[in-house]
Length: 482
Image 1: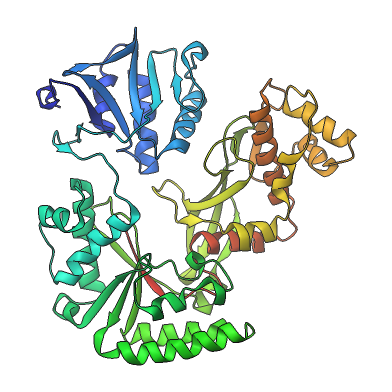
Image 2: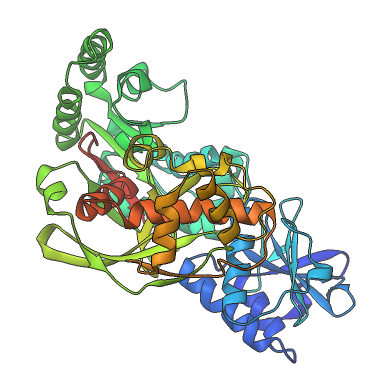
């Protein structure tokens, strides 16, 4: 990295692996920086950390403490990194740590949740980039504008049309997604035959609002069809509008009218390339992948839970627990898969959420539907955070208090038994504050209910399908990712 490229007048940041490499050359920092690099690479978040410089010099915020900043949109990431570093032997300096804002380690560096989106960032190639993150609408419009133009525009033209300065990573994602779209979905020569709409735009065609109206859907919109973009063939638009309006009116008047009629209609028009839904993910790899997502009965029937892989060493005072499983799907493909459960948003949140991803991959496939899956399979699982634990100083004491109140005997018996299908538990008797005890009991209760669920095969199949945004109600669409 040519340090000369950092701004000599003011604050600048080295992005991702580049910054960790720079700090890792200093005495005593090699091990923790290698831990962070390994975690970032495996989790697909290699660009979310920024090493801070002032006037071209590595900044010491406090004597001997070097600051690694995290954008404010990544609150969960702060705690995830803390857990990863602690699990690998890095000790926290509590006197210089502010919960929820900074975590300072005795080895002399600090993870700092920035109060604002960072600017003046140098990327891993030494080029200046805009670190400000585009909104979902801007991300989608940045892709759609090229479809409407019928060609891939230059970066500056996209920026001018959208009114946002996209960095090289986003321009690269748009380019790869455009190439994949025009090679696998609609040919470049046929783009002019279509109109393209962003799903989140309430001013889109009324028929697109109708088929995603929560009033007619048996599941949340994103579980039924998570399309971000709709392609509508121009010479079929009027016919589609009339037929969708008829289906919509019938379904709204009588909720017993099968959603399968709407699904079948969308599937037929999808195959004819008259109405196409597309889900978009930022492409970080070398090329984009196009998957056709369908509720095809053969696919759903083929999904099977095959068993557990390695058990997680679960520290009950940490923010999450993982379940490592082996699944199979169509054509007897087997895959290693990971379900992660943790409070969404603040680590002190009083409800838990789940998500699924391929083991070792980057972004999650998606969240497990809270309303229609988690709350059905694990009813009232969040209620434990509403309980009173007296003056309990650790989780074991809190459990004893609950059982004395004639509650959660099953949870205590399970904990004491010590035989768990997918994890090993530690630090039950470690002193903790109220926030950590509540979060720990919340995670423990979820782990208990999942571990003791009667039909394990059905449970994990539903978790998997929900994370993949596929269930018996799902509508056919394309997904672009990479």
